[in-house]
Image 1 (cartoon, rainbow, N blue to C red):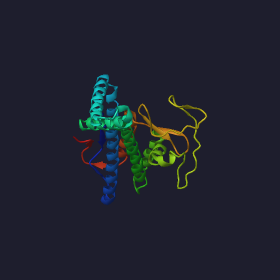
Image 2: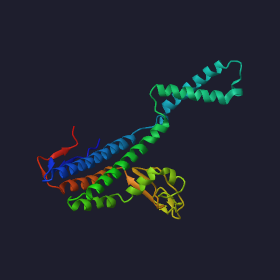
Image 3: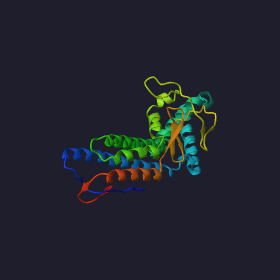
Image 4: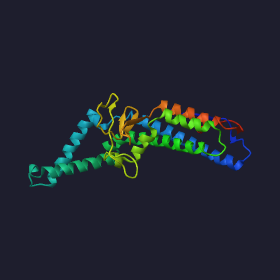
Length: 262
């Protein structure tokens, strides 16, 4: 498990207007919350990398094959008097249904579930970064906040240039899957060239959705370009740098605070 720690310079904001200070403190807590959501999603994502599909184990494969044969023979006996080849499709279907239900009841995870896990956690990481960006954007526009807050907010676009585009596609796959861009009346996408070591389409024309290349989650964005977010510790380091810079922009009182808690 990787824990990205945060040190807040104090316990409370040190400003005369306590109503204002309380409102800003709440927004700063929201930033911290999204930071740790991203940290959690990253750990869950990394955990999926060590999952070895059960079907890749030859011993399991042989045992499953034997069990399928046993189930099939039992079904054939239930259909006594009917030649198996005369009802092959039905017997095969019933064999698979019974075999799967038996495996699931014993705790086996469907292959589709195993496949989906890293994508789910990658999107959770993406959404946490996006929420962090939105919270910080709102905070930067609050009256009387330090000017540096807006500067630190701009750093998110530098650190994660494709964040908004990839998030928008993740939220509107129904449009991108049809080759459409963004907006109330989305127009057809002009798919731009992709050359990234995995896709080689220098002439464009390739639509990529919900893609994982190593730790990088990406999709074609609404402008037709391919964008990606790295679900990796390096991304968390950049996010922590921004968060701690924002926290240090304010005046604090009380003892320093360390997070997360046990």
